[in-house]
Length: 261
Image (cartoon, rainbow, N blue to C red; front, top):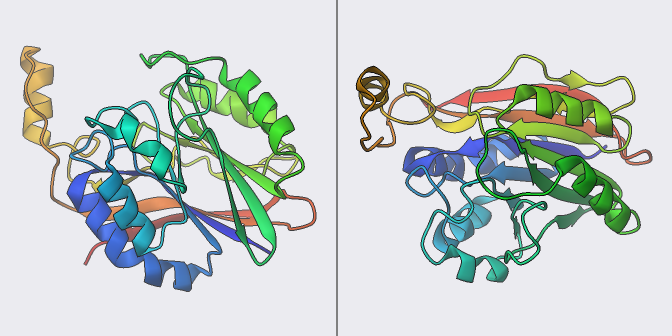
């Protein structure tokens, strides 16, 4: 029975360093066959670079997903096509570079992976995530045994609606972007594992990974300022999902959280 370990948004150097240090032993402890991580905030808290992607892959991450910060780092649009284990959101305009899905394999089991952006409160131009998943499922039907869908969305209602829409059709629908782990992880009635937000891999003594004082000050006076990545209470946050190899659906869901000593 394949096990998928999914890691929520990796934030800055603290998050990516802890993931790199811990992912090998954590994978062994949990018996994970596949490790997927959202790394769109891994470079200084906004975006990713080729160098960082390769560091995470070398450390043991099998697949890297991205979100609305995909193009935040200069020149990444010219690097992404070289990264075979990285996919950008599938519902960005077709002209965007990068893969729209991944298929990774272990012991003969093929797992399809894709991310869709929400269309509420996010500024990147994107098409309907519901219709895009339908299109991708038709495309992946004969090339994988199960599909993992990441919902990179701001609105919880949009995430939940997508989960119900895909229940029984994919192995999992797991949310990212809001960086705060939710308490609604479960397997839906028809066999799709669901969680509104997997949380983040990074500093929890923070406001969504950024230094508390700077963010609070901005809320108080409304002035723009830098929000440096915080350093305290580093954790890995995500979930572990068991998939039935014959049906491609989930049989169990477990939230995962590991704190740095």
